[in-house]
Image 1: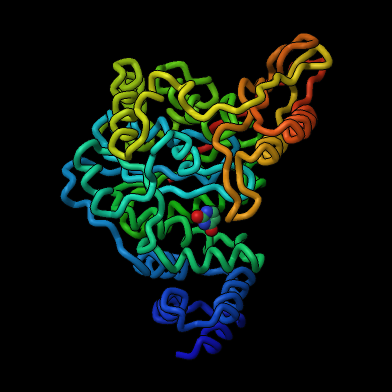
Image 2 (image 1 turned 135 degrees about the vertical axis):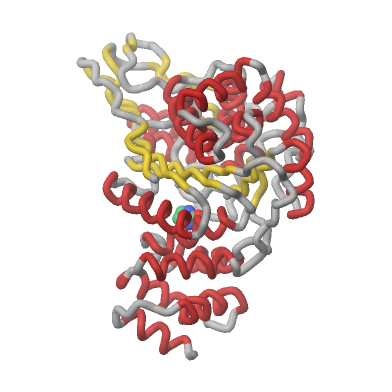
Amino acid sequence: MFPQHIIARKRDGHALTRDEIVAFVRGATDGSWADYQLSAMLMAIVWRGMTPQETAFYTEAMMHSGVVADLSSLKVPKADKHSTGGVGDKVSLHLAPMIAACGVAVPMISGRGLGHTGGTLDKLEAIPGFRVNLPLDAYRAQLEQIGLALIGQTADLAPADKKLYALRDVTATVESIPLICGSILSKKLAEGIDVLVLDVKFGRGAFMKDKAKARELAQALVSVATAMGKPTRAVLTAMDEPLGGTVGNALEVMESIECLRGHGPADLMEVTFALGEQMLLLAKVVATKDEARAKLEASLASGAALEKFRAMVAAQGGETRVVDEPVRLPQAKFKEALAATQAGFVTEVDAMGVALAALRLGAGRAKAEDKIDHAVGVSALVKVGERVAVGAPLGVVHANDASALAEAKAMLAKAIVVGERATAPGRLVEEILG
Ligand code: URA
């Protein structure tokens, strides 16, 4: 099977066979297809699409391009959640220990952020000493011991995705539902999970801006994962303003610890509970949504979830004292509030604008090789609908560089709009699919 023949079949709009798709994915893994052939194939898929059957073949081949973790020795159900990414989205940091405290193991293999904010791994690395690069044996042992591990993608997990994602990033071939499905699910299904909950975001701070397109992606992810024998649900959530009151790695860890102490902000906890309820329902440790909610709330009230978080930090070499003394997390040199210049109501906090301000401070990466500054970002952000007086703080900018501070403050000022009339914040949890 020559690559050019398979590429031509997709170019001409044919549905590929399982063998043809396997040949393409193998070509990405072992280098037998040249980068230009892989790129041509990716572009043909962007244009011609894939049928649900082809998408399932593709996801399966991507998943089997490397190791699939075997967690069958764990006697409890294993659930994970994945978010398509949002500004201030630190949900995994506190939701994973909450779920583990409810008796469901969470084997979570996460990514780093590229684009507007840091990813889960970047946030965890704000904790001094925290190791995200665990080999699969240590990952399995930790899951057996404490029911929770948050690690980075190992080299042997879905290697075809690593190769293809790097090409997609530079060949304008990211925006394709079958390619996104194969990419996300190959990594998640290789973790060894039983069930999966996806947080598919839409809005100005999301990867998918358009709600209908996000729904289409959510539907495809649910259908493919379910067809592959992993019960999956997707929660469609809005991402127009940042989630919670912080954006920036150490600041988000601090906010997650507050959530675990039972003091999380309303919007962040709404998304956390919505996802957690679906995880417990799919894992079949509860029969109803109300029961799931009560169990999650009890994990916070009893301190069990906070203790799971502490156990994970200890197991992964992190400084556990940050749990009780978050000031031990990296702190920025400058902390300056942005004051409101007019009285009224907050009508807009543009998630993308806030993310770009945080990026200017060094909280995210503009290029894959950029180094992140864990201390910087924005905290105490106002929320849409809040009333503010002249001079009231709209947010606090944390910076390590005076010129970045000034620029980020100006960017934040543009992202937050104060008007005369109160606007009610929009609905956060839009729909549950699956
Ligand atoms: N995230 C992924 O891991 N892959 C994609 O293709 C898009 C988002």
